[in-house]
Image (tube, rainbow, N blue to C red; front, side, top):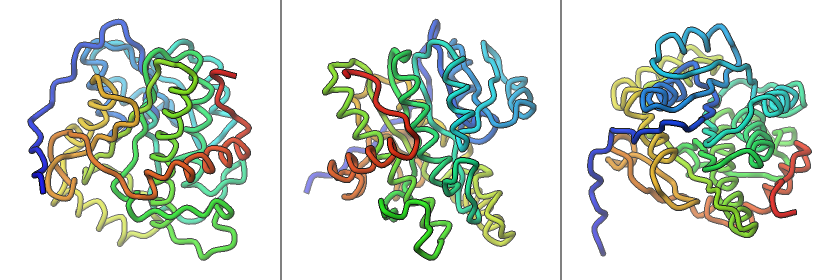
Length: 297
């Protein structure tokens, strides 16, 4: 059996002068580090954030050209308002997310993980596609390997709600979205592409809203002990956003169990590679959001 090639070090973002990026969830964690690196490389970066106050505080830590715009990806009205006003974009980085939060429904009636991690970004990407010039970047997780999708019960109304299972399902949805988006782009003759990344084990505050002090503590300290600092975890996202990789490429850390290491192309689960499931999820997402693929119609 052929040995997997050991990835080399990659930590220098190529110059991005004259390019405009939108990064969702850019006020902390991976989003903050992604936006900071892009701005430092000459890009103009739109920090798409739920709290403009926190976004302004994040922008103050950056050098380069940045702006703060309000976006709550869990609220379709906010997504539509943002998309209508943001202007032309080269690259959309769908980064914002929640992990293992207690069960709740959003203003649109969707379970929080589903709304934040998948449906809001699905709608945003489709709304912005006519104004994109380069790519959509999807931030997933290695937790997609444990994800199971029930297309008839995406809102967890008929099953016992399990927060980590809900998270894993949406991370699987991210990769299915990426694959089906690329298929549709190719079929439409578009030069746009969809790429994806996962940060492995990275010390961010994503476990802060689990509703359990114990789970929050374990998640936070576990990633600090065995994981990477946010700047290094963001490298996989930056690679997927700036390097010349084919559409439907998934980038992750190249170290042990993809927990740490430098960016490299990684595999995905059997379910995440299922084209029929990807098409079914896309159609269901269109039904739920009312947003459809705008190219080649």
